[in-house]
Image 1 (cartoon, each protein chain N blue to C red):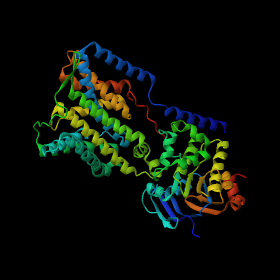
Image 2 (cartoon, one colour):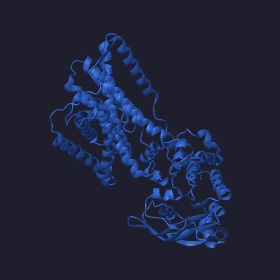
Image 3 (cartoon, rainbow over the protein chains, first blue to last red):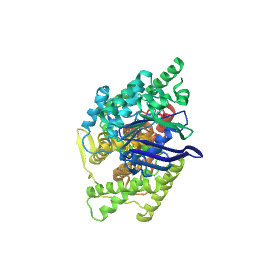
Image 4 (cartoon, each protein chain N blue to C red):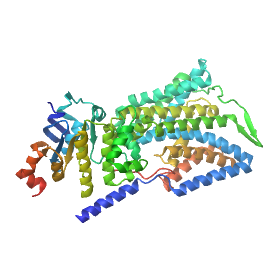
Length: 235
Length: 337
């Protein structure tokens, strides 16, 4: 069976600076895959390349079809939800409006989706009319996740969901991601600096170093790997 | 570690405080006081009442053009200097339609539809190519558009004064000793109605929500599948419709000439700044306040003759920029880096 998402020799640059030097990776349907690496290794750019938020070369195939060279809006319409760095929520809009925007590309009722979202994030119901910029950092990250779910994606791209959050909230958010994967079979590609928690969550992981895949394999294997332990897990 | 946590905490707090709710209590209080002043004044003096109603009508026109400016400013951070001229050109289109035998209100409706298409086309053909260069490039293009529209209209229709059929007739209503021109009431009604319709579109429809999202955060909007470029074009279309409404509602008092909207644009600009350039509600309130203010000052402050109306508007603009640059309903810019 072909993978849901396939990147082959993907390259990207910001002006003169080459950020990706040919990244290849695969995500199977129903999997959680983590992308690890230091700052500037190209993790975020990899996600941006997938959602066409940055100009890229090389082939990206999603569900057997090539992802075209349209804009991020076209990629969103293929069924890929990208929660970018800094969450990409609309601080000026209410919680409900953010959720409504998540389901923007779909016609018809969004009742079922709202019910599904509030099953995962029970606090959201009472805070519907709150301006989302006044939420706490953790709540905003959850709102970003919830908004992505409203899109009913086949693939969820998460950029550093743990960034700037207290450890307890990080655990909470990763538990929800695991739930979504276990219960609904949601496919997730997550970029993380926190290698420890990412390797616990993911079935498979890629380690990026200066825009290239340095290492890849099942999480359990990488957890044992000498250089991963030394560089990213710290023991 | 704790130092880092503290730092993060501070960042989070600062972020929270910058996004706080829009309207401050003193300003609401001041607006209520103004409203009471106008009502009491109108009840005690019939001239005051007449001037207030005429001012409201004029202010509503300023307000709708100011709203057009704000719509585009929010989406592209640029003042469209051609906004008034585009409205003027559309008024001529309406005039032409009535010449061809259409009734006023049919021509009015058709003109608004044409104005929408015109705004969209202008955005697609003239603005979009320079949109990503720089703010100053777009500003220069809108100034060029001003001159171009002016030239084309003068070329087609000539610079002499023209007249359309009076849309509201010339009746005057009497309530006690107070005389209200039907025309003032009509202008007020049409302007306010178009503003309300637009507000409903933005506040209660999916399209309106998507347009707001695209204006606020284009990158994030694209990630949920919104066609950001189309939303900008539609925004220009709606602004052009508002400009056309302002033009058509200016015609009954200023008549049709290529310069008819130039002073109105200055008033609208003053109104938008008074309300806070980022705030649609502020633009409308600012317009209405300015219209009433200019009329009452013209009536009761004797050295302010009609030649001094424009300088008076400039004075308002200047005072707002010095005393409260964010205007009545604007707020300090929120920019996340």
